[in-house]
Length: 176
Image (cartoon, rainbow, N blue to C red; front, side):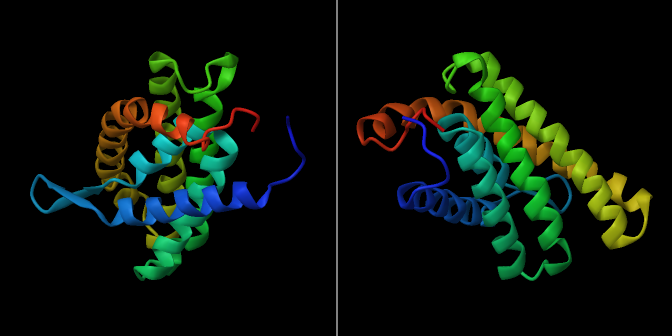
């Protein structure tokens, strides 16, 4: 049954997903000469695939904003709230469109790619405003693309692996 608004259960799940996103964003993977990627996008993509756009949107917004506040990236807090919130909503909405409910691997890949494209575009604007130079913003693009690529590579098998357990536990509902 579809309900209006969020229930306490919904808010608890969103809070859990936001906390997982914060932790995942703290997990850094080095690549190249001093560059790093994180697993925050993997958490957003996985949340979207498993729980849909509403849950992933709220979790992406809240988790990313809290991460920025906790880690001293406050100039990006509002940007992250909007960019990652919309990215989560995109990922979940695409993954759950057409009755797929996050169970179609091709649709899930498309969901991750669409969310990654939005994230890159959003952060190009954010970096330009915060740093003040478009050239520097464009220079950050490879790290964003790498982070999203790793996110896709992690999210697709992870969501497949944990779906059954979440369904058996009654945590995945398809009425949102």
